Length: 157
Image (cartoon, rainbow, N blue to C red):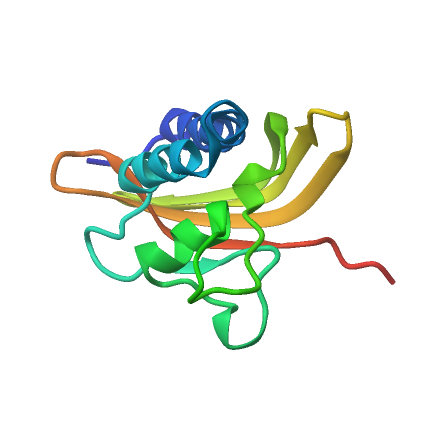
């Protein structure tokens, strides 16, 4: 079950499309629509059903910087969780387009990592570019799952 470059490309494209779908669900169906969409995204893309995911979101801080649980990841994407009062819902920010620029990949059988930039454009045309790393493994069904997701804003000297 070796992971291929094409699978990594597909996973990044699917992640970007999923982020846009969360934003649109929020606009069309409110927070419950966004939450339902985000839960489906987490179930399809991340390995929370296999154990903790090493998730460090872009805009998380303090004791809640890291989100190894699905509950913490869901709050990051849609907010509205009193257990995570600083989360405003990254997925609710009106995203319309997402693409990635690869720096490098590493593949060793059923484990792979990708590093590069992810560029997101919102409905007002504002662009956000983040440094991102993902690591993946395949689950028992052979589906690619995110086991590490690290994101940060580029360093500004």
